Length: 216
Image (tube, rainbow, N blue to C red; front, top):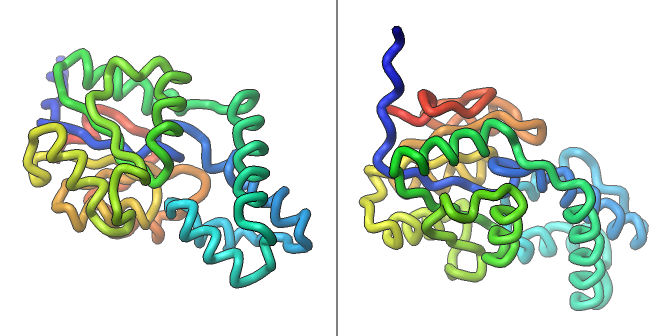
């Protein structure tokens, strides 16, 4: 009989793309808003902004098209994204399975995201994962964002675990860079919006999350 995998000391998950397929919803919302302003984003555009906070994405697209009044744009984008969130959000089965298994094993879990704290709460509630997650670090909880290590360092501190003793789970090159800069063993899961080359800096790349993948 194969022995069960050794559990990691602590795990910090990214949210968008890693736990839930929110990236495709964000792509649709951005594409609709930009199309209204006469710009059709390419797949390269969408890959360039994945994993970055909202402010960075606005700067990226503002250099390509006039977004108009920033508050009007943000309100419209949020309205479209939330409509898609309510009807089309899907959480990844492998992520749900691993989070629940870690929690059952007593492993402290955090989420470090480039999205807002409120957004992460909504995703966790939708997947029934809120009781499993002890700490949330959203974009509004830190001053520096991915690819800087601040979100991961804040998550480790809040868990009371040294960063070197944490395993990070990511799905973008930006997130991998942040987790590696924090000194964490970093597992990248290959989702549809990134390539193996994008994730090359990770300690391990997997096509599906498992408990075994999280041990160094």
